[in-house]
Length: 228
Figure 1 (cartoon, rainbow, N blue to C red):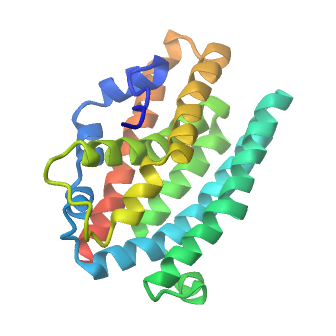
Figure 2: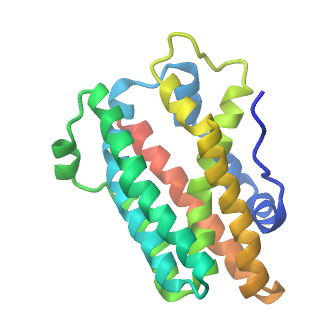
């Protein structure tokens, strides 16, 4: 069995616990459960894939901003590696996967951004512009770690169907060792940033930031669910 994510670790674990029902609503969303059961309508998933292409572009921009907000070479290298991973690895994989669903890259480039896509990505960028590296990383964390947890939960759920499930490849991508390493690194990074820039006086604002980002991620699932 694959090693589980360290979800209870450090500042991330505290934020996750204190986000309460907002976090549970996100990682146990009906869209996700339907993916696991193989019952998600194809139009819902196709809409999600097109919007996720646009989402990834803005997340690459957010990590570029993280580089600007970095004050050590190690943090700058980490941010640069994340930009490269999205632009040079994840985006081509996403384009190839979408092609299997009959969605061309030109179609995704021409896709209007859904309000939910705009809301979360611009929130993340605004947090980074207005705050520091810690504010930005806290806003990014629900996406980076939440997808990993959502799929961990699916794989532990007896209702999840693996054989003959159209969405097995998607689940495999977010349960694999490579993605677990990315999510675990994000958890570790939050601890480092909090140690440098945190303090109890900041915690309430960081929790508000984290919870808002979590709700915006839930809205992104809502968007896909409604398209079915």
